[in-house]
Structures are given as C-alpha cells and as structure tokens.
Length: 221
Image (tube, rainbow, N blue to C red; front, side):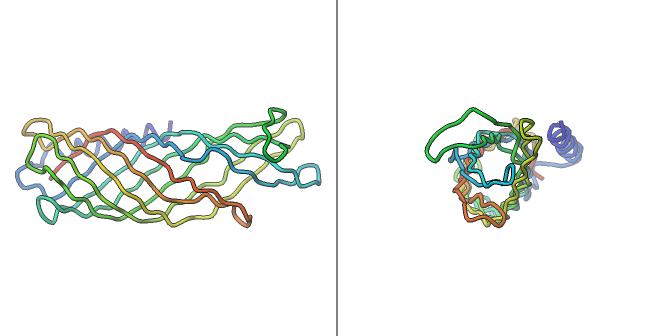
C-alpha cells in the first residue's frame, strides 16, 4: 500500500509539472516507474541461535516489486547524466533446521526483504529524434537492505537478520515513447545490478545481482 501511494504521488507531481512545460525546450527527463525485481540467486544459508543452540537455516529469495524514479539531464541530444532511485523488495522464505544440501519444510515463515538503491550514471541515446528513443547506460551507487524478521511460533521465537549496505553498479537499457508532440512519454526499462547480500557480522554473503524491469511514464522539460 505504501508503495502504491508513493508511486501515485510521484505521478501526480509529474502531471502537475507537465501541464505548464513545453517539449520544445526540454533538457531534463524525469521518469516514474513501477518496478519488478528478479534476484539471480535463490538460497542463502545462515546460522541462528534457536533454543540456545546454533541451527543451520536457509533463506531463499524470490521476485518482488516497488517503484523507481530517474532524473536525467541531457548535455546533448545523445548524452545524458542521471540520478536514479529504486525502492523495492524481494520475497524471503526462512526455513529452520535444514541439513547442508537438503531441503526442509518443517518450520518456515515468509517475509519481504526491502531494499533501496541510489545510483548516478550516464546514458547514451541512439535515436533521440525518432518516434522511439532507445538508450543504454551504466551507473554506480549504494545498495541498502532493511533488516528482515521471521516468526517461528513453534519455538515462540522471532528471528531477525540484518544486512550490510553494499556498493552496487550495473548497466541499463530503455525506451522512451513520446505521446505525439506532448512532453509526456511512456517508458520501458531494464537494469542489471551487481551487488551482494551480506549478513551483518556474519561470514556468509551471496551475489544478489538482480534484474529490475520497469514500466511507467516520463516527462521532458
């Protein structure tokens, strides 16, 4: 619900700005997107103290959703620099008491691993004067995860896992499709990020390397 409200708020701001701007003098591009995240990894083994004993557990991750915002300044018709922010999550499943290399359905709980990433980078626009503007780019920034909690009622215990912030970088490709002569446009994009998921104070880490697809609307001004 919070993500839906935030996305709606961003779109309302873009619409209000677009009502007074002209596409003819555009140097800026703002894109508001709905985003879907697919982590490239699916399993993370960790130890938790349950009942006074260290127990091996498994944390698996699946796709999630959220929203993103891009602000790009065009130095020329083909080259732009941008700042982007993505707020999204991944679905996490915690399984208690597995044996190494085995699966267990004995005790488990589901919760989301929320994260955000803020990046700076540059885009190259191949077809800026065409009906469809195709661009590719590269970026780098910070990947930050919220802690995640899992409830194990069988043990009357809650497991909390904290993660370290990580450096991230990656590549992107996208399409801007103008609505006729309007400064408004539809946007499609895909990002590939290189980033790890590392437990705070723990020795284990895995390469998340998510693919993030997005669809939304944009505005040139």
